[in-house]
Image (tube, rainbow, N blue to C red):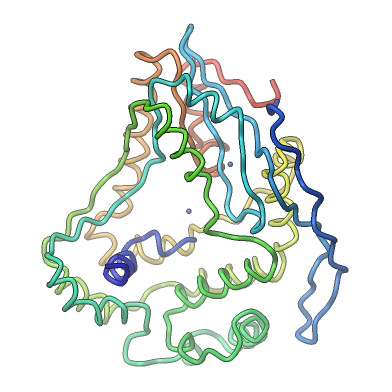
Length: 348
């Protein structure tokens, strides 16, 4: 079952990306000792940034208010410190009093195939990461890009030859994941186990906001995908640039989120956005036909409708959104302000 779920996920645009006044909790443990800044034989600099450890409170919550009705929003971030345990009394107290929890918007791929049919498609699904016609990365990317890849791969991945046959998009994702591990960060660490536990205890209504793309017969889709060349060189190059230049900023952002340092979190440069990687799929012919681009816009609009309805009917609502979805000129907080709601930052 795990393999079929993984294989189905490969078809989803999510694979193009990897996609934010605190009540005192359990005292945080001391951070692990900082590493000294070093420059490896490959010329890549590793900055000496302290990675926090142990139980951490995380950031405070944004508040969207309509009269006496409150929507509390947790901004989530990825990656986070690998050895951190998040414990937010504020989130737990809000959910204890909430009538509703709204999950983040997401696009899903609904493959309407039976279990046995998915098993027969498994080899093709798992092969979706590979380049068409058996080409290797060295034959696809520029010589300069491949030289950078070789240095980074040697440092973070090692001698895995299989990844050399992957599409640049997927090779970049594998490199990114391994670089996060080496840097004391975890791209898979999630706030949702803590949130889900509070939901189980207090039983608020849970609203799921999604836009489903229905695939009735995945076989032709997989056949087309196997022959599709993606415009993913920019994704490959940009991901390597982020690893080469942004690791220290990623550690600093992760630390700021974990310790609830909102001033530091908002003063740091914004995290790298994955538009080049997501566009490699959404702007390909197959992605356009499936409607990935339209689905992303639709699900964001659905989330806003759900949030406004919750503000109308509930005294207290809780939600969690990625920082990149929450902030900025096109973020949800800006949309709430434009609609006339009162919006308060965690430190206000």
